[in-house]
Image 1 (tube, rainbow, N blue to C red):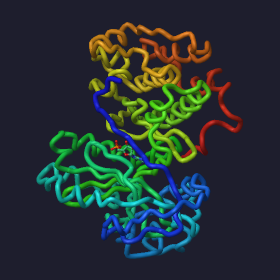
Image 2 (image 1 turned 180 degrees about the vertical axis):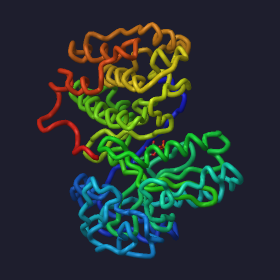
Image 3 (image 1 turned 120 degrees about the vertical axis):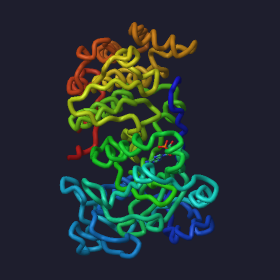
Image 4 (image 1 turned 120 degrees about the horizontal axis):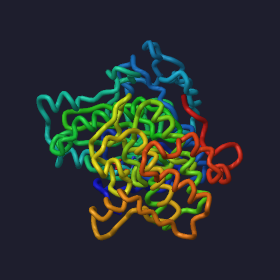
Length: 415
Ligand code: AMP
């Protein structure tokens, strides 16, 4: 696949341990021994404990206390966290969350920190002094690296590593902790983009959008506390299977449409929808991640060329203004790629050829695609943005409805 940002994604399998890991701050690999699997219901535990953020602001340091602070700084019951967002039910802590094996830490954060990155100064340092405890909206409590038990590496991103972690403070949430090196962000001149990505993601709450629970920084690094996507990358699944069944594809597209409706209602255009930016939750549900190219654009039409070539709509290829309809086009490309195994306008002879095919809407749908799926793809891949089928109609489309399992395809909708 031709893409501007090549993304490597990997995630290890989940296991349950009899004993929790402790003292990750000392960060030696020996301190993070992997325990044998006990075969408990991982899915149930993770969906429970990789749940909403119960850590509102008003408390100084997570590691210093085993009680959960309330919004007003008063300690609440250690077994009943106060949710940051009232619309979200607080997860019920139980002793078993500590039994989830987060895997063995390889000391990667410290190894990297010795060999990688420099301090940043001036305007860039200010731009990257990101801390959710002092965020304008929904501030969290103050976080530090020492507040987490660190487990197995989940992957490496462009600016640093991602680890599976557990909060030392009750109820010991399982999260993905992503590290970004400030100096590398500055070198790539994406300070503003990273800041925007974080600000956007922090305000989103939807079952199919990866939740950002909090963030903090030190001299050289920014750390993002992200919802743990237990089943890893969707892209990996697609590569493994070549393509998905229409039932599976329809389920994902329904979930995508649901998430995009939520994002668009909040005036967030994703602009970089592609399999590499999608992760899977522990129940196999789709999670949109990576808001690197998102814009928060109330009433704005934008003109920047961005995103992956294969997923770019004609209006962006032709340098015209664009709006949230770009995500509808990308949804059409995604539907095609899920079912067929490659994107519709891919041209291996080069970028220009791909651009031309997109601009001409040179769409050839293989005969194996059902008439219902074909109908939806064609209705999404319209040259004129205004002619693309609306997201609410996507969710009612016969192809989506016929494959939707009883009780609806998405998890309980967030606020
Ligand atoms: P990124 O920097 O976002 O590209 O992340 C690097 C890799 O870490 C990804 O390719 C994923 O395999 C893994 N990863 C990132 N975020 C998560 C998450 N929230 N849950 C599980 N794995 C993740």
